[in-house]
Length: 108
Length: 119
Image (cartoon, rainbow over all chains, first blue to last red; front, side, top):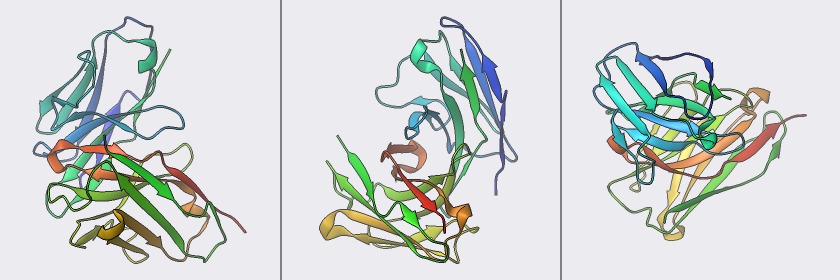
C-alpha cells in the first residue's frame, strides 16, 4: 500500500499569496493522484485529477504538477474562500483502492 | 448535475450493525464508466476509504475493514448501500458516499452523514 505524506502540515498566509503544497508517495504512483479541498463540515471537493488535470469548474488559480513520487498543488493567488484543508489521494489502479495523505491546512 | 445523498441512523450502540444507503440522482448508477465508493472521516481526522462497488455488484474493500463490511447495489432504486457489523466507538465518523471516476478522481460526493457509536 502506498503511503502519502504531505508538507507542510499547516501554513498561514494572506489573500493574494502564492502557495505550493507537496505530496510525496512511498512509491511511484503512475498518475492516479488527485487533490481535494475540504472546508469544515463539508465533503471533499475534487480539484485536480491525474496529478495535473483541473476538474470541471475549478478556478484556473489551482494547478497540479509532478510525477513519479512527488506531486504539488499550487494556488497562484489565494482568495478568501481558499482557506481550507487540502488532501492528496492515491487511487490504486488494480485492484481499486484509495489512500489519503494527512492533509495540509491553509490558514489565514 | 449528479447528486448523492446518504441516509441512515445517526446513533448506534456498540456491537450493532451500521447500515447506510446512498441515493444517486441526476445520473444512472448503471454506468460502466464509474465505481461507487464509501469513505469515512472521524471527527478531526483524515479521510479513510471503506469500499467500492461496480453496478454489476463487484466489490473491493479496505483490508482493514474487509471482515466487517458489505457493499451492495440496487439498480432499480439507483442506490448503493454500506453495512458495517460489530461497530465500536472507533467507527464514529462522518460517512460519505461518492462516485469514482478512476483516473478522473472521486468527482462527486454526498454531503456526508455523521454516525455516532455510543452506549
